[in-house]
Length: 232
Image (cartoon, rainbow, N blue to C red; front, side, top):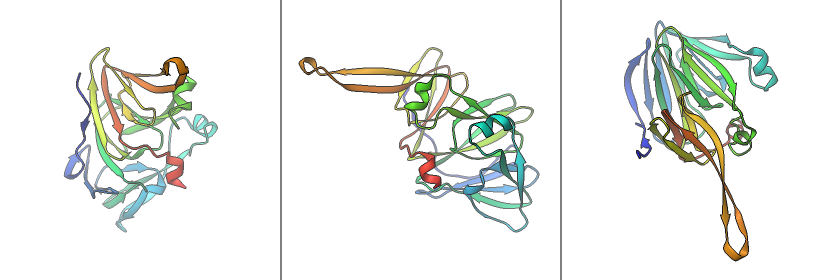
């Protein structure tokens, strides 16, 4: 079986879906985007700096009632060029770009995306099975991004380093519940339990895993920090 591979840690002058972007820094990385004809949207608290010519405003998102019930923001922040804008999350880690072709969808762990281009539709979905939430931290709700009619980009922040593996059909990987960062919707996820036996001394406890089953990509992070702790 293939093993997860480290994603590239820096990028310079990458152009896709109408924007040019740069990923810079090693400990707490920064995403810098050169805006021209394509706006981007993001969570407001991760904005680091911008050009005076870059306009910032509000963007409504799908599923307002669902987001309000779940206690999530019902408005995002958008930026329109010309100009430069930069983002950084308050935590050591790695920023990875996910290029989506038209029709592709990506599932991302809640509150761990940085930004996305305006062609990408953003919604939320709930994970079936309460075990995914109890032992996976904040994974009851998943951020979902879809490039409906044109290619787009989603930039994701992972704590520690970010690795990726592509699973074949029926191929599975067990992850510590805090490790998964993003996945293709074709990858199923369920929680499995492994009881630890201590022989004559009885049970020594249990392990809980998120089992990912392909086909599709899975991204994982080498360190897990609850985003609520980082945002506060």
